[in-house]
Image (cartoon, rainbow, N blue to C red; front, side):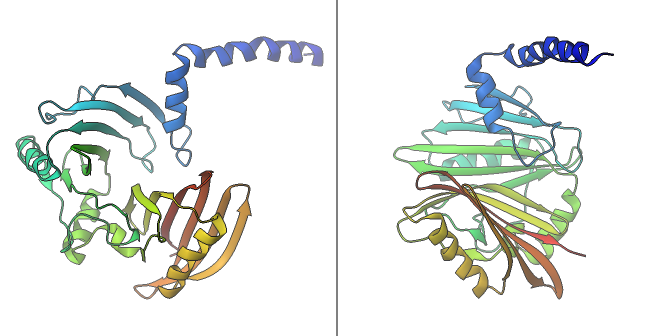
Length: 287
């Protein structure tokens, strides 16, 4: 086929391909692109439900709740399980929210996930400046984990409810029952800088790996913020091996010893806006 014909064919096909993404409203297209996980496979399909909870949730939210919306991620990749997250507000207190879900989840076949002695809040990683309530649950066949997080804001309780497929559920349960802690307990406890606001935004563990992300608001520069957390990692026995600063991103690789084995540590700081950061910390097995 002549080169000019190829160029013309490409020009004809390009508008068609671009038009496929324009079948939804511009606002929904932007929202679904924004919430799609950049670190996941390209096969992830993200769906946003505005002011709706998914029809297959399987249990009732507290009466009178105001649903902000839901985000569903679906993929056929077993290394990236799918799930759905529901955001809603309620006039119930965090304790009353816990009581509600202990009842309705028990009726729906969910069981309370084993907790560390000091409760459901993260034992390690980025420690929040505002305590977050709630607790995790699980069910088998299908193997899934449900995480409930509550935060009191004025006279309203903001609730984030995440249900995720968990292929390694049996392993997670063995670890929790044996060690009495969440996977985040493997991460060093990272205290926030003075005057900062730190909000954990999820994560998880499986096999030899554990990852946590957090939103950080601070007047510190990215360099100073990194120095703050790096000092705590070094104190915990982590050794810095590599650092790269590219644009608004600082990526660092560390090594550490855990259970007599060498592990790879990761600390990433992404400056999303002036004074606002997204932090990621993780551990990956090397053997």
